Image (cartoon, rainbow, N blue to C red; front, side):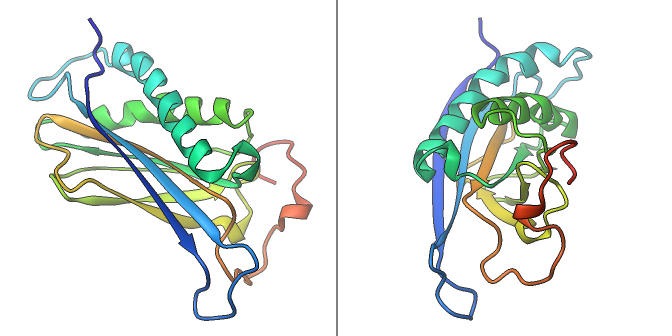
Length: 193
C-alpha cells in the first residue's frame, strides 16, 4: 500500500513583463506545481521517514514534468526551487523529506544540473503560503537568478496533509543589474560558479 495519497494538484504560471522599467524582450515565466497529499505520520512520531521519502520521488517526477511542459521544455529552465507546507498535525521533518525526493526528481528531469536546489518549508494551515527561493540551475552564485515563487493552496494543507511544491523559472529577475557572476561566466564545475 502506497504511503503517497494525493488529494489534489495545482499548477500556477506567471509571466513578468517588467518591474517598472522597459518591457522585457522575453517575459520571465515562473511556474509552481503543487500536490497536496495525506501525511501518513500526522499526529504521531515515526522514527523512519525514509520509506515516505523514497515513494515521493515519483511525485517529484510528476511535478517536474508538469513544470517543464508548462514552461515549454527543459531547455527553457534556468532557475529552480522547492517547498513544503506541513499541516498542523505534522512536524517540520515531514516536510524535509522533500529535500531529497523533490530535489532529486527535478534535477534528474532537467539533465542533472549541478547547483543545489534552494528550499523553504513551514508548518501552517489552509491558505497559507511559502515563498520558494529560486536559484540558477548550474551555479548558485548567479545573483541575477536569486528570486522567489509563491506556493499556496486555498484549502490546504489540512491538519493531516502536506503540500509539496516545485518551482522553475525561465530566467532571472527582470531588469537584474546588480552584478555578480553572469550566465556566460558559469564554468559548471562545482555547482557554485
